Length: 262
Image 1: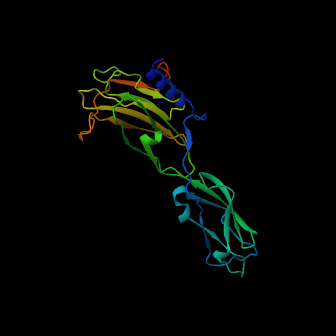
Image 2: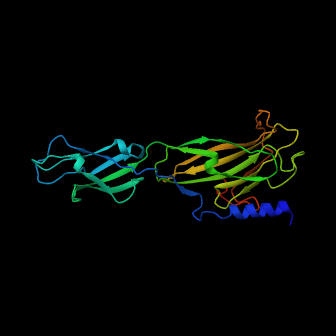
Image 3: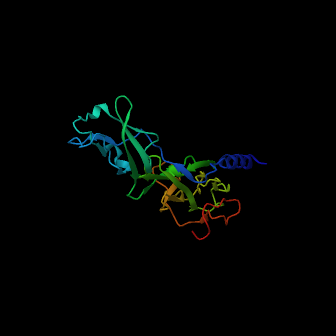
């Protein structure tokens, strides 16, 4: 085995150590989020605390949404003496929340449904590879696109669905190393070779990405990975595809990430 073959075999083995759940990942929750507690203007006419039966809130507006509590007849509601407890992070879905007093006694409860009504937005990024030393570099979905508008803790499927290069694998003056595109079994990582033709305007890889949210809504975009010709400040110019690989299981040695025809 040559040194190049050994390096490629090691990288393929590294990429193969994938998440068994496929392309699924969960967006970070960040800091704990909760709805605000507010007291109703007037006390009720009964002897029990009253919480709204249910409350629907956008996941991005949790801290700005108030759960209004009404105190029993003749009793003053002091929000500084109340606490909202929840057994799990307020991620997408329905959660039972309980209002408790300073003695940790449950006063009333509500169901809070966390929703996301706005579609996701995929913002493409451009990645640069340098120097053109023929080495393979790992590119992850997160390097390729930024997912905007996802809820904290939202589970998404995100993976590469195709890749192309505007230079052939055996392009003259490129060093003719190959393969130039290696895909991980979980479809979330690619290894791309940092090389370009000596007399070209640089090499540009284009990577297709698909994101599917929990409701089954599908979003697609593409990003570019450029290997500039030199460091003069001239950026690589994307040309017509020299070849394109669809990650549908039809290419030998490449995992299938999508069904044929999708």
